[in-house]
Length: 418
Image (cartoon, rainbow, N blue to C red; front, side):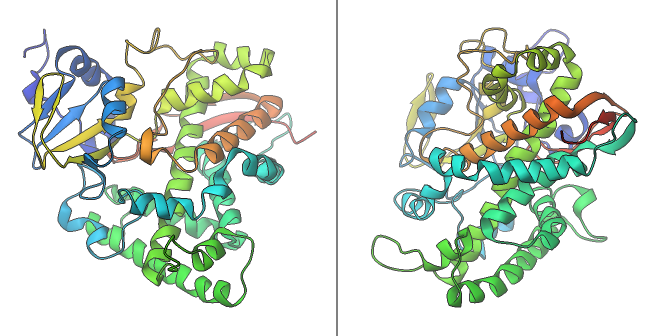
């Protein structure tokens, strides 16, 4: 189908890491797909797939986990020969029922809303310390907002939940970058390709956690590593070494990326929409809907793949057994049938039925943690941040899986804690 002055749908792409690095999210393309062909088959790609771009369709697919599997392939952008699942045990992201539910239940209680309320003071302290390190008083200073604010807080919280020392925060940050951004030259060592970067980082992470697991077996603590080591599945079996290491890996990466990128994207949204920052400062009671709007607006996860286990019809299109689908969450979060003025950033948006955390079986386990962290970070900045402006264009991650902001250079003024 042709589009006035632009390429046809056959000529566009939505899974080019290079496009995301240079231009950010392809909202114009997703808008066309929602309007012209919301279940569109990209057959010219190396791995042909169906692009699912409507809110209702993503919900329909996500609520049928036995019919649409996570396990075979996590992302359209991953070559099956590169998939770490071929070497390492699957993580929660790769699992399907009933295995997924069993493994998720091992630590579910540590991620409930009530558990997070007990953790809030610790998160407050971590955020306060991070902002203390960049406070300037009445003076202006320059910094990379990602490196100094939005990255340290979630890494510190995850390290605290896992029982890891503060001295290892930067190391954890590097590994998370390399695992999610293996496609990005900034995170590759000289001479490495994507596969080599990902494999090296995975092995380094596993070596690091292997040493800690032995200690937790002998000396259990009130942390996630001890829960992994000593937890039992429904049949009484304990996790083997590979399963525990894979659990640690996904908690490290997934527990960091959503909050970091939502916080970075949220700050950028406030810089670009200063009226919304003033509105929030004038009425801090809007923080809860503001957090939800930040999540809708940033939609840190670009897509996850699903594999059909049987023939299925969606909007008149015939999906065949074995077909791949890509669920584009940022597109769903701009769906005109769900959101009024979806391309406006409004902190008082209500209702806000965004899918930033997914839906159904694979709804993000750490959603309450992420919401709490984002809430705490912006509450602290509300009372401390004087002025902030961009010094240069933000740099984006080269990835079609996670929509990361690598660097946001800013000039700012921030007071110390009261």
